[in-house]
Image 1 (tube, rainbow, N blue to C red):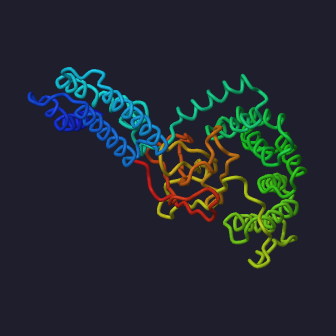
Image 2 (image 1 turned 180 degrees about the vertical axis):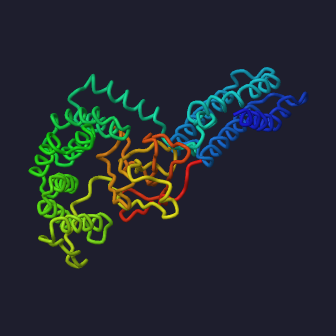
Image 3 (image 1 turned 45 degrees about the vertical axis):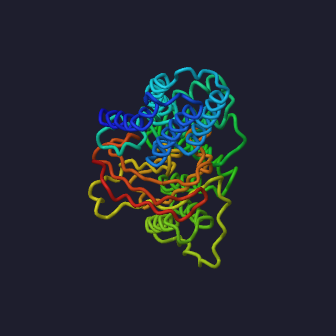
Length: 413
């Protein structure tokens, strides 16, 4: 940070070197034209600094536009004042003093107002400076909880709170939030499936009991909901009802793309169940592409694709390690907009992220022209990057893209 301020001071001094000499000239009268020139010089210097912040990624384009409009308005006011000859007595040295103070002061105030001062702070070891920290997520949880305390009928807010608590591994809290969302929402199969998943995680990854009842309710709402079918198949498999598991998993193959990784994983699970059942049931073969069933309509802003672990890093992870899959803006603040949680044993894993999964209101995928999808394997289970975590990022994509590929191929240092 010290180096930054030293450079900033030098740049301001350089700007003043151009502005002050004409103002301090003993023989030049302080005319309205001289004041206008000073105002224009100040404006240009400030505009250049704003443009440098945009180019450096510390200032968003909309913030730049707003700051530029303010500068232009101030410039017009200053020029209008000088044209009236309000105070033209001996402004040479006064203008010099004013400019000498105003240029660095206005630049600093503008940066503090619309820039990113926190970017100058030292970043946590092992992170890239752009990852979301656990403290940030917990802060979001606290703010959302406070808002829900004032507006407990906000079903969308309860669903967001459930998803965020699930990301943090707070499964009892996630289940409680989902319960509130379910109570206040019309029947929603996906919401019920997420609720059942959180309930199961809260009781030691066991699906019997209340999770099983909620799964059945989800399938009544939508018999083709993929997550509910997958969970229901797992319930049957754990009860050694292998034929029932096969029948449920085969229904997933009717709605997912036949060449997707999810379809391949489901076919592998069916093969395992078939072998355990003594071959009494046969897994449904992969349908031909021409006859493939059309997938269900995508949710708003949906991005789908696959996350894979590079073979070279396979030995550095365990099947139970947590995998965070997230989407964040490619430009501007790097706060994730959507986060879902899986395990290494599920890789390669198909994913679908959309606006309904937003971690807070006003943070939709569809609001951003360019996005990056990332995946990180966390040995600690923490949402904050830690040394030894494994990660990977996609190329920039946009809301609505499919077939996005994310390869976890580097280690956080």
